[in-house]
Length: 531
Image 1 (cartoon, rainbow, N blue to C red):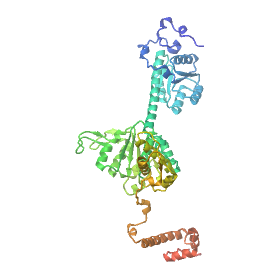
Image 2: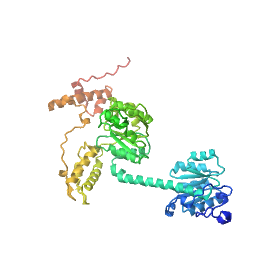
Image 3: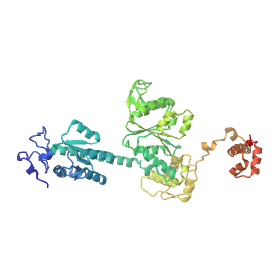
Image 4: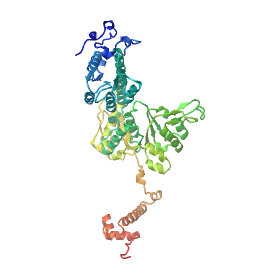
């Protein structure tokens, strides 16, 4: 049964806690005569918030002492909070599993589940929840143990109504601040358009696998190496990873390692000291310091000069930054590295362009972005998106955008797209600029670009000398070379058994014998039995 505060307090002290608290007892909140407070704040001194805001703060009270539990319940409810009270740690864990709470106030000494057990459960599964532990006969060691376990604060018995109100006000302030930060982060994501739907469009298996991997690694601080041809969207993947990481509200700083000469690149990345070189008239922090607590994108990392790679290794290992012209450590930074390259990083290591130890540190998780020609089922979706986006950007008044006919979509699927998604985006912008509202876009409305470039993979095995020969001579030489290499390998794989070799090549034996004789391919003989 709840009792009135007048029946539990001396009349001479009835006005001490006149701040809207109904249930105040000596047992719960302390005897003022034995525990005088040196400073009694007024109502105006308390951390205030509108009643409607307090009603959104959910509080869970856990205490096996009925009088204390009911007193806390009435006091907190009187302040306008949404409060629930339970009498055991078991009930508290059930409530935490089934509901969300902003603040948990729990007694320390309970059985079989103690207040420390509740703190640990909240830390493991409810990271956004603040825990306040009520301690009786506290010591410095016990209070330290409570905070080390993950509690936000503690209340030492006996405590006053004002003390409880102030602590709840502080906790409410932290909860509201976290909500504002979460809302701000959501607004930034929506404003920047860094959602998966806005920037990582595609349904092809290879592309969705890359997105899945990027989403998983985003939750960690692991270094990521994004590999893909120019125009595939490597920077968008980097933005996606950053915006879905715990560093999303911190800066993401990008630098193109191929765009700057070595001295300028070093100065931009690491900063410089005054007088380090001609024109250095002041100390200047580098981009690594700017990216502190955030993310740095190293675009075209395989083009970074070897000397700078060694210097970057120190930053990755220890976070130590030394500016150009400095003889001491200028800063210690916490940076998450995302790198991007349009070439095979292993080829860069073999050619000496990239240090192997740097590659191992940057490629903790590789994300391979497929070329557009390898995800042609995504072309209609991407084309429609880029067309609508470009139309809205170039048309100040809302009008019906043009549409792509089925013949045009089929034409788009047949293109090689050596510039990948960036090239497709450029084509759609061209259409949006010249098309009329509601126009049906036919293949002839697309820009025609003469592109006779051959992909590097198509040139493999074709020497410059061969390409300058007459057509028939070059063709005969290439066929002869192919036949000799093919049948040498075939006979070797068949172990010299020509019948087996003919079956493996799906040709008759007579053809096989003729080609072997034509190219003078030696036949390994099986050793004679008995020798």
